[in-house]
Length: 290
Image (cartoon, rainbow, N blue to C red; front, top):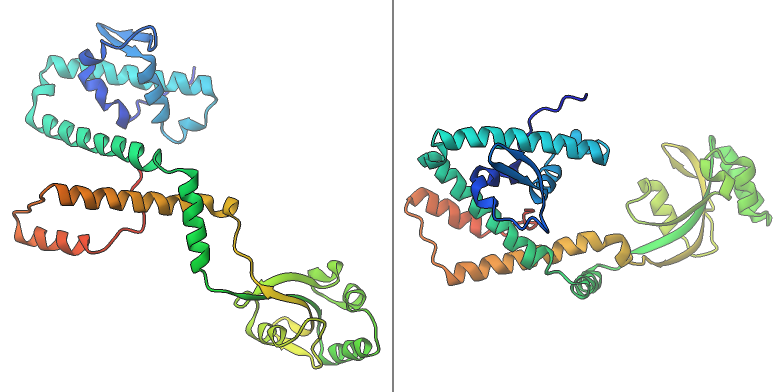
């Protein structure tokens, strides 16, 4: 039988107040195990599964449940003993419990008003706003033929001048992997190629090829531009997760700003106050995750 280690279950800290959980509706939240007089409900087991150690989280579902139940039982066992010793009345424990309660309430509010509050329409609107603010970028669709020597490149240019097909020459003579596609590199914007290659490619018009070899660290190139265009923006489907994060960030910052307006924050320590004011001037890059 696989031996499971006791796990630190953040969400199961509520188990320390186990007697209060006994009022759960057994019809919708059945008891899956008892530890003395304490009960473990399905909802608690689900929390334990959700908070498994990452290594155990890779196990098959049934094994995950067993691991989570083992952990929940361990928590209940020691929690019960802790209550018998009166540790639940300890001042330090009460401070930690109050902090955890506030943090979990923050997370619940965050989930309700930020995570669950984001609509598809908001994501689409933010996407369109971001796209509209993007600078226009030119990109070219180019082919190239790469050879080792300048003389080879010059000979290829003569063949092109004589009317030979660029793609066919690339398939025959290029040393670049793109030779199988006739030297086709697709569309690219500035900054994607080495400087010498980029300078030559962006100086050409559609249908033109370089009349002199272009030397780079890879060898000698003959480049032909097939087309130029303004680079299309990424599709919403490709960036919607990032855009959703932006919407979530703005919602979170708005909630914090309103809360600070509605509720007075007073910091007694002068150094802490100055530090807090300085930090508050700098908006976070993203909303925290609960």
